[in-house]
Length: 156
Image 1 (cartoon, rainbow, N blue to C red):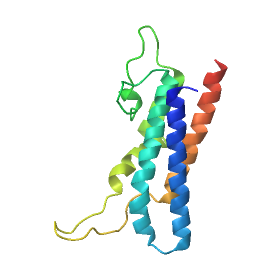
Image 2 (image 1 turned 30 degrees about the vertical axis):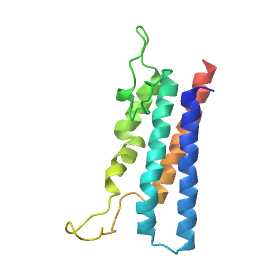
Image 3 (image 1 turned 135 degrees about the vertical axis):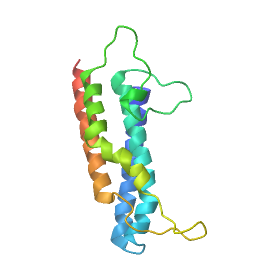
């Protein structure tokens, strides 16, 4: 298994652990759902985005720069070796970044931030953006695409 694949799997796994913990905390009803959303959403999104970046490196079959984290989108991938064209899978993922299921994942990073009335006030917890159901769908859709693309690439 490539380093990028194992890192993608690990990040997706960690994101799913957080999703399960988020869901469990919602069921316990000890903490308001909006507060749980502020606590869990950024961490889950961070793991899913890392998984996506590592998956991009896996699909492109390129290594990241030493010490560099995974790319956030197809456009941030390291240059492909000379004479090698971008594969259909990367073009498909680029489409998902622009208008598919990955677009809201990126947009949601800025939506889940507490608002303040003034500099000295406590954060206001209101509509904090996508909820757990949205994030669970993104994680499931991403896992499905990983499986489908990996099966396709393994056959080549």
